[in-house]
View 1: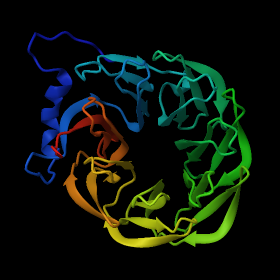
View 2 (view 1 turned 90 degrees about the horizontal axis):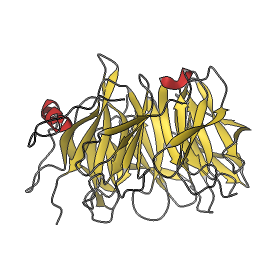
View 3 (view 1 turned 90 degrees about the vertical axis):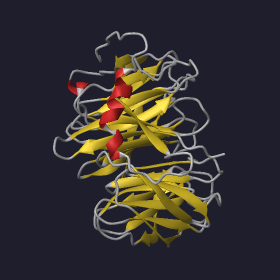
Length: 371
């Protein structure tokens, strides 16, 4: 657990003082009222953060943060009135999974109306931790996946439309697996596997979730959901070389999911959906990155993007403008959430230091006056 120390009255919290060490990294374009995201400091230091999610786990009206860390146990950072996150609760499931965290997702897996956690590990099976609705979590006692596989990420969806949360887990140099939930939080592997990475969403507008699958050096593939089974269609997407990850987002507000292609060594790109699961590449290019976060940052009703640590505002008509770049290193985790409760989206980001292999969790508050 993080060491807690007292401080004299009137002294800023330690994490705000730490902002001085990262403020030089922010060189965003500034509007009349200031930059969009202002650095507020490190929430987690000396870690290697690969997954982050934010929900109000203890039901106190403030969003908390769950962190998946390769070097330390996963943990919950409880939000307090001063954004100091003094209460930090480790989530060690087993001795083996005290480290090697590589991803996290939040859903109600056992149908009790409380939020649970799905934690992905490197070289060890994934685990589900059942939530008590008060911020506490207990290991389900169930290992998900095969020992020795190195999980890298997880996406949650109700694949078979039976009302519970199923899970897609991607693995390093292995095919992605689908794990189906029996409704009690026991997940078993489907017979289907997929290429290296998957993006999950309803691409053809028929009400069930489909996937777009990534295979290194090959075109992306579209798999349509037919009553809980995925069928590979003759519809490939020539996304090019150097691609690291895929995401499905409604970029143009037309009600269907477009494909965002994150370029690891190439430029990132947006492919627009015709509403039936066929994609056409837009003219817009974005910076290289391996993480993207989506949300209405400027409160204009359109979905904006944070690509790596570059902020792109949606100007409408499929056009995005890069208005700020924050550069504490490549992003290994991103999350947009209203962490301070003022009505706009703030940014949680883990910035990877290539020299040390570590990535601290940083907080940036939305400081631009939009109105």
